[in-house]
Length: 303
Image 1 (cartoon, helix red, strand yellow):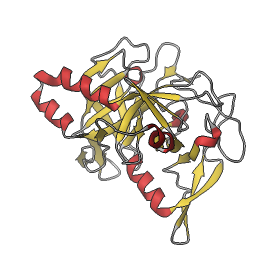
Image 2 (image 1 turned 180 degrees about the vertical axis):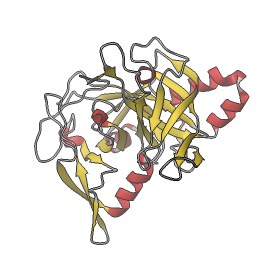
Image 3 (image 1 turned 45 degrees about the horizontal axis):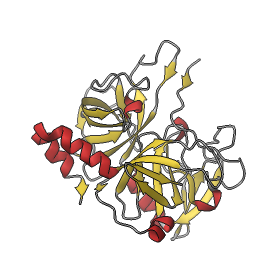
Image 4 (image 1 turned 135 degrees about the horizontal axis):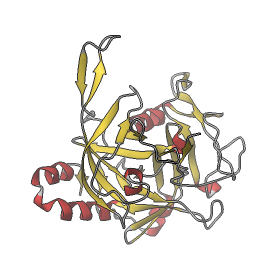
């Protein structure tokens, strides 16, 4: 029987409203953002499916309903369109039948950021595509890995270029269309965030990822702390969110989701992302000799 490698674990207590690791900091619970059951209520509200999770690590996909402003939903949907599910190539599971899944997000020019452990769960691969491919959300297109430009094992981050894919234009697939990642659907990167303690404590941070391998989920929590190359935050996340973006109120990626909290629920619980400042510094240093890719990467950075 195929099993799923657990990449990030954060737990709460199963109840009508999904909990955060620090429940009072939850702003928006897990939203199954692309659920076909999401529906408008009147002209200003959207009823969306939310997925509660429990202390034992289980999650119930779309069990609850959550009402949110239509404008907020549309913004969440647009951001989530730049986030992809990692899915293994055919027969790429290991000898134990484990399938590796996680998240990556598009920053433009067919480039994505993810964790190194999403590319290589045993951390051995730093430079090869090795079955890494991404599944889109709205059209179920699978984009193949073209080139791993750089991976940093210590910071657990990779810059990967994705190749185009084919979309069938008829039932027999005798006519195909070559499809690239949509350049308008990407998340720009935040350099040098400047916030005081009070502002950072109240800031609403967003996580988007392939929660439990159940599809892209969107969640928000209040508060962020930045200490060196680490960002500590409280937005809910679960297994499979590894490699997803941590997004600030400005709509820019402030970090790449990296680690779970050792304390699953409570006032001392937190999640960890590598800061975008560190990611930008690493990539610029590594890509110095590759001017073409460096220019593409720099076009995603907002100074």
